[in-house]
Amino acid sequence: MAEGKVSQQELVAQWEAVQVKTFTKWVNSHLNKRAIAVDNVRTAFQDGVNLIHLLEIISDETLPRKNLNPKMKIHKVENVGWALKFIAEHNVKLASIGPNEIVDGDVKLTLGMLWTIILRFAIAGLSEEGMSAKQGLLLWCQRKTEPYNNVDVKDFSPSFHDGLAFCALIHRHRPDLIDYEKLTSEDKLGNLNLAFDVALRHLGVPRILDAEDIANMPRPDERSVMTYVAQLYNVFASMDKVEHAGRRLGKFVNFSRQIDEMQQEYEQRTKALNDQVNAKARHFGDQPHGEDYASVKAEIAELRQYKTSARREWVVEQANLATLLGNIQAKLQSLKRPLYVPPAGLSVRDVELNFEALSGAERTRRSALNQKLRAILDALRHDFANVANPFYDHLQAIRSALHSTATDLAEQLALFVAKTEELKSLAPQLGPIEEAEKRAHAANIEDNEYSDHTYEDLAFEYEQLSAVFSKKVSFIESQIAADQSSGVSAEQLQEFKESFNHFDIDGDRKLSKLEFKSCMSSLGIVNVDFGQGGDKAFEEIFQRVSNKGAEVNFDQFVDYMVSITADAASLVQLQDAFSSVTGNKAFITENDMRVAQLPEDQVQYLLSVLPPTQGGYDFKAWLSAQFGVAQ
Image (cartoon, rainbow, N blue to C red):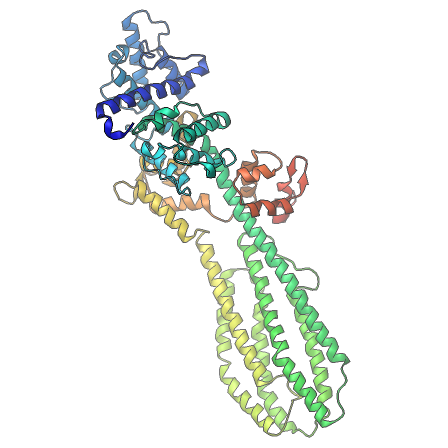
């Protein structure tokens, strides 16, 4: 039926009929706990008995006064009056609703009373009119359906007309229950019946809506849709906790995998470098030198070529590997993980020893060649050595800072900044070194037995060392900044700000208790089932975050959000995350990982590293090994 052919009066009548059906089913879903069922809420509460049963069930309290066998109207009016008083005592205003109207069967006031009860005890209870509850529930729907291109939840009426929004909410939390890609907006009844059947069969959500009442109405009844969505929210609230645990676990898995990959890269590259350096050292020890001037000159040229090509590449690789190892240790240290110990022969010191052996082989080779060129003036050799050797020694003394054992980042930063300035002060010495080398070359001096260096080597090592220190300073500064940010990205801070501003209705950059509660509800931190102690749990959160004040400012809000979303995770937090994912089992299964919505690559990684155990995989043993503690 087209919306233009239905008058407003007819539409209201249709909404009323749907509300009667929906509220009757909702009431029976609670009354059946006492083996009670009503046929129609229009007349179900006229004697007040069923109303008293309903309030006691959903509030988990007992009304102090009641008459379960009223005979006269006055007794019925008293029953309804006691029930309405109970509702009012729970901070709910019942404007224009009195016991006589309910006893007399006033349908509109009876439906209005039921809607007020649903707002207070089933949806949120965030305000007398339920506006904050509606906003929080709508925001939850929008966040959960945002990845679905063909779903745009703007309200609780037309947005749910084709059933895709209901299916998207279920698919977001349980993708195994619905093949969402096969759904189309044209099949409204099919989508709605699928969502309601799946929710009833697999999630235990009572089917209080009929698909025809949604698909065949120009505008579905908002109150009926909200009542049903609230039931989905209550079911998925616990799943959101598992999803959050999964995200935390996912971050840790990514971190562990990244560390594993970095360690493997370090070991492979270090082994390759050691093989090259050691092979070259053996070559220098085994290679004979020529017996004539031309041969010796050619061999000297070959040695020089090696030092300006392959050896420089190895020196760069040595520095890069030291930096890579430092990065690995810094990452582990930032999350309080045990430091990485390279396998035997692959430590930074092992590489240095190999280079020292190579340098020794080079010196031996060079000395043997230089014995053939004694015509070179010792004075010029000394001139060059006197400026080059101290410069090189000074460079090595500065380079030794790279092996500092300081663990405090601020101390490391101060050390490397000071060494950078000391390195800059050596630059003027390169000029005299270059001039001394030119004089030696003019005298046909091909090498200098008093010095292991050339101007090019020293300039290269100076520039290379300058670059290493610059990178080191930048890395430590970045690490300090990352530590100070508590693991919160710019995107996360923006999301916190948007949530805060959304519920800061008066724009005073403070959230009242009601505004803060609405915000926590929309983020899934506070459950809407207030019959399960939600008010008490929220009160504890509010008192802690506001520092026992009456309002929460933006800084307090951010501090609290940081405390529950920070990337860094302790062993206890990760054990809790695994327990949430497994439902407190002693092991984890592949299905647990998928229900927690871990990406496929993370699932495969965990399956490859977790020790198998009876029923699944032993995550406790793996975590203990990751943190270096006994299980």
